[in-house]
Image (cartoon, rainbow, N blue to C red; front, side, top):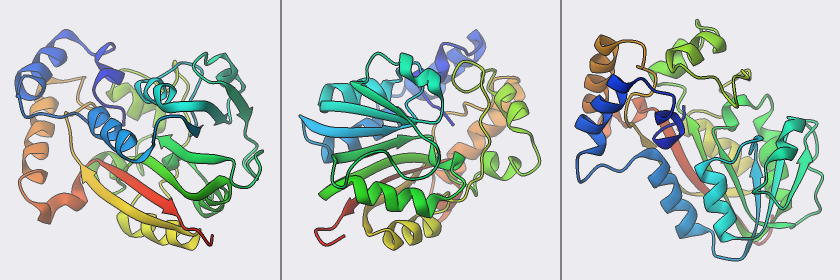
Amino acid sequence: MPEGGQTAGRAPAWWRQAVQRYYRGRPEWIDGNQELAALIRAYIPLSSRILELGPGPQPTQTTALLRERADRLTGLDIDPEARSNRMLDGIEIYDGGRFPFGDGSFDAVVADYVLEHVRDPLSLCREVSRVLGPGGVFVFRTPNRWHYVGLSARWLSDRFAARLRRCGERGGRIYSKYYRMNTPRKVRLLLRSAGLEPLQLRLIEKEPSYAMTSRALFYVCMWYERVVNSTELLAGLRANMLCVARRGDSS
């Protein structure tokens, strides 16, 4: 569920104008990319060894930020075209099993809109824990299954959902979504089962990036955003989860 600058270039003019008026034009507004960037800066020191899961062939804002903080930035992706990502110092193609790295190889692992695509998140979390050094962190952003986008994914095809935003993933490719690590309860359970302790887990709702096909739909989604952000009692219905987890010394 990309936000901010990751969608603006593909959006119709009326949508960009509405987002500027109701969101970006507000001095207190912070978009999802900025919130994720703040977590990365807070928990990943400069000159870290960083592994990015699913970086894709084209650098994103997240990859660019990781490049600034990394002594070495490595990617792990299922798509061989990720080898063309010039911001990475190295890239390995993932077969869905064991990560092709030694124990304790990284200070941080980052995943931005990746975990919703994972068939076996417990195995992935165990691999993340294994390749992290003691005290290393796992930082990620992923959709909340209980948001209307996650709920609608049960009935809408991934391709149709992409059309609502007028863009596909990674240059038009569509990747299956499973939402097997996409509720706060499941995130905490899987992380702790893998020896990773959640340090921060919060839910956020930002500008309606899935409402580019209709002005009426935009205003309905904006009303939803205002409601779920009005009280923490409705936080569980917000769009995305931001999480930081740390590997303990004894994992």
